[in-house]
Amino acid sequence: MIEKMPHTILLHPYVTEKTLNLMENHNALMFIVKQVATKPEIKKAFEELFEVKVEKINVKHTRFGKQAIIKLTKDFSAEDVGMRIGIF
Image 1 (cartoon, rainbow, N blue to C red):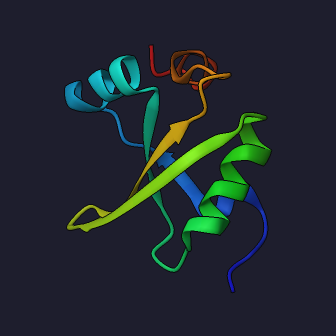
Image 2: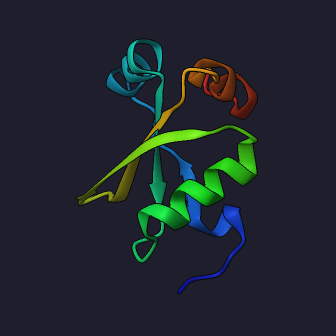
């Protein structure tokens, strides 16, 4: 079990042209997360930090670290979250 603080689980957003398309077309964001973080911990941290509801989390391990694709429910907009954290 890792620390419960959301900012210790979600390290930073991963922004590329492909992830911007993901945000616009699939209502999802990609974040680099702590290696030991589980899907429920990532979901809880994201929901607490940005005050949104998460529909689904997909995780992949790359040479850049552990990446989480976080899909939001239809009630919330990934673009709004992206604006709040300064992606645009």
